[in-house]
Length: 198
Length: 198
Image (tube, chains in turn cyan, brown):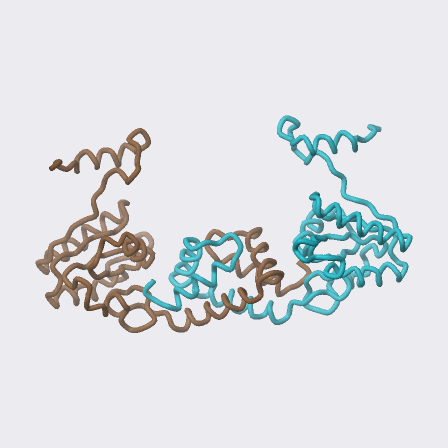
């Protein structure tokens, strides 16, 4: 490009997920040509977020304070703890509006090849919470993958040692799923997990 | 979200073209979870670009200095001036590597409804350059749209008054275009502009 600082902006924008050279270039030109206020706002929001976002001391989700809003909300069910892999998963469960308990964010899943063992998943903090004795049930909402399953099993064993029962999200046909297009693995789980009709 | 500064970052990222709520959320979480260095780099690059990028005094393209690298490059043909609508168009022509002259960026096109008249297109600066007498030919590389055509015609008339000849990019079938899938307007232009074979 004709301007080194525009070049650097384009390269920097490629740090965003799913953004390649062409999109980054389009974004850089758009911000400078048509939305300098937007550019200022992004720069300011990034600086603020980097400065003030930390992990909640109880659930490890992102938070601006030491304990996040969900953990400090006394109106939520203190007896159930939903264990998820990432902060994005918390947003997904929250948007279902079907859960009123607390969360625990692993920030990863057991994956020895990637260097993710029990130490990285904050199981010490989880143990601390289970030993407080308020928790009746762990809902294991890890991914429906091999690694997610292994992580869930590991945590379920761990919870059993603290006499806390664990449950796992139901597997089956997604809402609106047409049988013809559902993969065989999902169908097999849906069959084995079939439920009695009232 | 559980953090107001993460919320604000998500909202700010929606200023990027083609980025909606879901993508912005994914970008914000990605930057904070996995690429804080990238986030710092974007914030810094935005601040630098906002601070140092301006319009070249000769061609109106983006530049870090008063006169851009292309305009101050004595090795380029000073006699031809390629007139384009946006800085992105300069990049497109440059990437073709088929042009060695200078540029003039209109930063828009004639569009009375959007409030774009001759005054916004920098035609005073263009007139200044034409009156210097170095320019032999204007290559009008505006869009192949009604507004682009009107803009090109307006500038061609204007150049004629300064005894500078104008040319227009060829219209026809794009490289790799299969006749079956070419629209009728393009085909009609390709027929009327057919060229003698050697």
